[in-house]
Structures are given as structure tokens and as C-alpha cells.
Image (tube, rainbow, N blue to C red; front, side, top):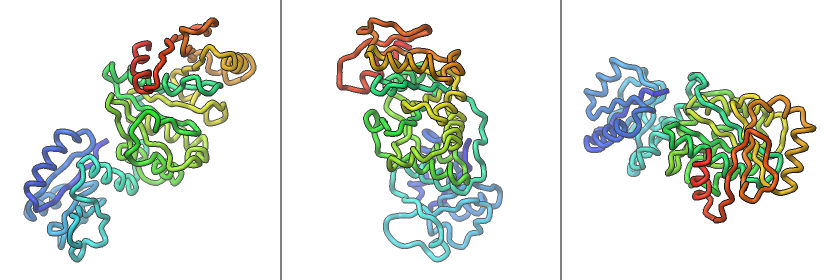
Length: 332
């Protein structure tokens, strides 16, 4: 899903830099037209319609912006916008181009009427355990890293009550809470907003920064969670959902939607007891057992193997969390 973006600035050097960067790094997200003269701008507006435009004040004043769904002001730090531009939402000119595109996509998402326009294409893997501390997040990230190494696009979606994201990834980005607000309002393009706020780690795994506060995740309904899951699934090859240890309606809905469920265990007695209870007493297990794969974490120390099918992961003794999941990715 691309947006048609018009960029109008009389700074020819900046226009050339933008054009080169957008072609090299962002061609999969935006179809950009860059104009550096008023004549080129008028020609573009006369012949095409645009989803969004970044317009520098000297170029935007006096032009008919009717062909533009979302006109935005490309705002330099100094000076004030000319008459006719003050009402436009401003986007900072001198910032990283990746940040500019993120801001444009976020604003476009708010006015777009398209929701989940692309069909689902991802394989969904849910990662869950009835016991805490067994290494669910490590397993989820190890699997995502494996898929990236195979040339797939992989998105890690943390749905835990308390997010594990800050322990593994850089957090200098926009919170997933912005996406929650759109899910609840049912307005705008969820997928476009996803493009604007998702981040990618050095190994290629896509992710969202944690919620702005604890309740933002926990007040979501099962329908909200499914809307989030389906929107993310429409934009990647592999979607890995890291779930909390509860088995409520939200968890059950994710299980139903998943192609596979990794049920993570470890050799401790409390984990084995809880897993046994889930398998023997909980109706949900009977509904999903055909797609369950047991992942026995720290299996080198285990004296009681999990039922088949099973993936066994060795016990790595280190405090470097990223090294752990990258190493374990070879086991999948």
C-alpha cells in the first residue's frame, strides 16, 4: 500500500536530496513527486491527484490545493508560514527523512477511509505458556529472527500485560498506543498508521514500542486485539504474537486465528504442573492441540521431555538477551 506524495520546495538542493533518498529507501511506501519550481507544482496539480503533500510556504501560497487529500506544511525552523498556510498541519523540514515519512503516514492514516485494504498474507504464530518466566519472549524473537534469516519479513507483536519490548529493543519511537486509539475509534487507515510507527531492529525484526502506560493494552477488547492482529498480518510474511500467561477470551481468539501455537515450557516443577493442568482440564487445549508445537526451553537441564511435536532449546547462561534469541534462532 503506497501513498501518492507530492513534495514542493524551492530549495533545489533539498529537493534533490529528498528525491534520491525516497527512491532509494522508501519506494515501497510512497510514490513521490518532487517539485522545485512553481511551474512544476502547477503542472503536477493539474495532471494528478495526491494522497498527501508536503508544501513549503513559498510554494504553497496561492495554489489550488484541491487535488491533494491531505496538504501539509513543510516547516523550516525559522520564520512563520505565509498567509494561507497557517491552517496546515506542520511537518519539520530538517529532520531525518525516515521521520518525515513516518509523520506523513501518521497524519494520512487519520484522514484515510481505507481500513485493512490488503488481504491477510502472514503466517501467524502465537507464543504462549500458562507459566511465567519460561522464556516466551525469547522463543518468539528467536523464531522471528529465524524467519528473517530465511528472507522473510517478520513482525514481533507483544501482547503481554507488561511489555517486554524495552528489554530487547530500542525504544526511541512512537508508542503502539497511537494504534490502539485508532482501533477503538474505527476511523482512518490502521495499516497506514502501522507503517508510520513500526520500527525495525538491526537484525530486521519489525516491532512496536511499548504502550504509553499499562492500561492502554489491558483495556483492549477481544475485537480490538483481532483488529490489530489482522492489520499487522496484512503487512508481513510472518507475524509472531507474544501473549500473556492468562487464557482469557483475547488469548483464545488469537489461538483461533493462529496457524501455529508455540506452547513454551521449561523443566521446573511449577511449569510442568501448570502445563499438565492446561492439557487435561482446559477446553481450549482440545480446540488447538492439532496446531500446538511444544517448545521445551532450557531442555539441556530437563529430565521430563515435553509431548511431541517438540522443539528443544539449550540452556544458555548469559545476561545478553539479544545474543540469547539470536543464538537460539538456529534451533527452529
